[in-house]
Amino acid sequence: FELVRTGTLLRVLINGEQVISSEVPAAPLGRILLRGGTGALQASALTMEGDVFLAPRPVPLWVAAGTEWDEHFDPALLATGTALHAFCTGVTSADDGSDRTAILHRASRDGGTTWSASARVTPASEALAGRPVPFALADGSAHVLYQAIGPLAKRDARSTLRVATLGADGAWTTAACTVRGLPEDLAGVRLSVGSAAAGGPGARAAACTLDESGAPHLRWIESTDGLTWTAGPATEKPAADLVASGGVALFRTASVENGMATVPVGASSWGDAAIAKGLTPTNQRPALLALPGDRWLALEAQPRPPYALEMFGRRAAGAWSPLWPLHDAATGAACAALVGGHPVALMEAGETGRRETRSEEHTFEL
Image (cartoon, rainbow, N blue to C red; front, top):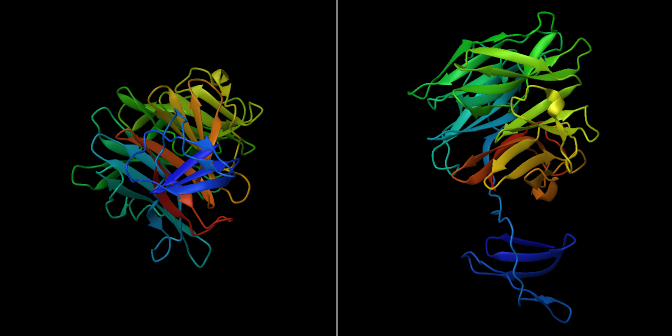
């Protein structure tokens, strides 16, 4: 049973099929009362309690058409005390088959209603840069940890991690990072996108390192200044695509039967991971968001057509339950942040029923 309101149109659905619709006042309804009639449902006496979500209002942030970038990937969000920052990786393919990538940035100071013009975070001298992981330090400054080779690097290429810092004048400056505690014989190092976990005097992220067979493994990296990071132990079994919110991390792993697990942020052992019941593994990075009252939202691009972005909810440590598709067109990776008490999501989006190589980045207020 569902009640779906879009503007002033209220629809009643049973088992996903609409049974009645009606125009309603624009103001909040408070209570909706129904009673059974002859062949239809009519308003009468029923009181329901639960979470209320506003119908999503998509706002395109990056659109490939008419720009220098052929595609946009790796969405990331950072909410600070003064602004909501959105990031992505722009990709341009040359005629010779080579690629050029850059980290792009837009900011909103009104909760996502209006946005600044798109600006380049990484300098033009870095022809390949991607996988942005934004974080804020204790002083409120905004930073982005990223991979200097880019998301399309070959498996045997060694990545260089760098950090970009947003200055008071609105300009970005970049510097090299040092990551201590990584084995010297790694074939390569890459970041698990969207893995920033703020809190305390420093920052924490999840690096994804590749073993000799090319399988990914996660490990926590921590820093107090954003420039020098210390790495912890890696997962025993392959794992990737970690996202974190409210002290909990969600990631894909081969260590549990359904392929999705949660673990406390910064846990001393990856063996503390627990199965995320109700979620299904996909090949796209999910989104995780902690809400007040020990509630959680997860966003997952479904592995089958039309590749809709499904929203799941959970209370406390219970199982995940599907809520509804947030976006019914082809989607990819997603991320989410809490702004002024309202969840905001940023996602890759294409045309209905198929994944588009010329993707767009959209925000949604839930």
